[in-house]
Picture (cartoon, rainbow, N blue to C red):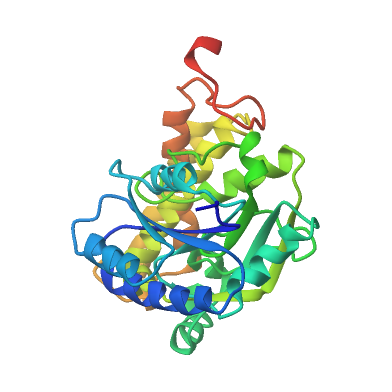
Length: 321
């Protein structure tokens, strides 16, 4: 068969119930489009019934494929998806979203008509989650849950993995995602770095926030423990970009780490360590958790040779160091 125009890629790991709902919405969407499309499910080493759900979807469609990326880390799953995709346009989403019926065409069209090389799509939330994100410590940190609100619609800095697309020509200069970032590794910013790289390579990135998927994220991410885990992951992930891609030096690192750790200990006592409710988690504590994690990680990364040239597009090979 000739290659499809659009490859839809979903990276997943142990999210079988959510994956089933995501695939149902994608099946409806693909059935409504006139664009030639394939759906690639990339299993990042699941131990639940993910393979069964994927195979069921494939049996019931003519456009589904299943790919195993056993090495842990979403970056590895992303790169396995790139290797498997046959489409001219790569359209990505996550295993916990519901896509609108016009999703494929409206995300692909700005690339098809030559207006851009990549598209940052929109993300919205079901009503009960949207209400929660308008309260407490969530209001100023909605970006942690993949909201597009922090992006400038006129010049988006990055794409969000739950809803992004780019033309295959991007891969000529930015061939893969960074495997040390993202879930299963340092935590986050895998799509952010890829977006920064494609823009540094001269490719165009536009927003299309009106084409929005609905994000049904795991409720555990909104607990106190989940928020602290996210803060630490954000700090670690930015430390990698700070050292390896931006080539910045973090002066007085030990002193700044000690000061941030002292402040964090004080605010932990104030918030109450025993509480599992997010009601006792302040924005200040989350900021300190993020800062301490950044300081610890920058100390590790700072001892490594830089992985990229300054704002580079591909990792430096050992032979080139």
